[in-house]
Amino acid sequence: MFNAPPDRTTEVFAQLPATLRAQDRHSRWASERFVDAGMHSFLEGPSFDLSGHLMLVDIAHGRIFGISPEGQFSVRAQYDGEPNGLKIHRDGSIYIADHHHGIMRLAPGAATPELICKGPRGGHFLGVNDLFFARNGDLYFTDQGDSDLLAPTGRVYRLRGDGTLDLLMQGLPSPNGLVLSPDERTLFIAVTKANAIWRTPLRADGSVGRVGLFVQLSGSAGGGPDGLAMDEEGNLAVAHPLMGAVWLFSPSGEPLLRVRSCAGAATTNIAYGGADRRTLYITESHTGSVLRCPMDVAGKTMFSHSASSAGVSLEP
Image (tube, rainbow, N blue to C red):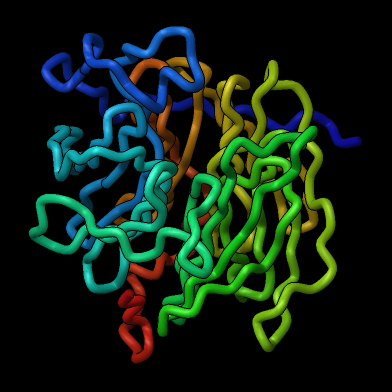
């Protein structure tokens, strides 16, 4: 066991304005999970575009938001779906892990996203959750569905640039956020219902090595780890909903920092941003807020901001 890491506090960067709060609208997604199906929003999936705007989703009402560097919200798209994870392609397209539909793509200038992968062999996913681009354009994503400790049916996939879909892992109790290490030889997965982070080695041929436990978390009143983010030194940031915190772990799993929410406890997902990528942005879904906190090490450069190369089309 380790000593408790030092604390760091957050501040509110942006909050969903009253004009965009949908308290009176029924939410199909919320009705399956909560007593109150009329929640104002459920923010998730933050990711920065090249113009410095923070893109994120509202799972409850099928909305894609953009937040300006000054903290102003705007609606980028709204459709009949349940967008959960969001990442941005190098070409400016927004890729969405939609729990209801599958993997979707919102092209620059388009009003609604298109479905590009609904499931394996023409079938359907259990309910995709989060996604992450490798440097070569391969898209890793989790298929969480309703998996838990009693029904560990969750899966992890990779969608290659040529459209090939690879099943990498199965039998997980609620796979959620995921991220690659700086050298992209290891995939880290937040396994929510196990309250743990799993470490997945990736062999040179793309196959999975022997999977192990990276960090076992505790507490959280029935929740578990959600979004993940990686910095340039290989330190892993873990959003821990219901704990109201983001943990930072070293590459060897030592706790380095606890970032505490200054708003609600539903710290669902995270992204590094700012001019030097040394600010951690956190979605807090209970209050409809995005928090931020200065960090000591810059976040890993995302695929959307990396130099171009061939073979990354991901066309259906």
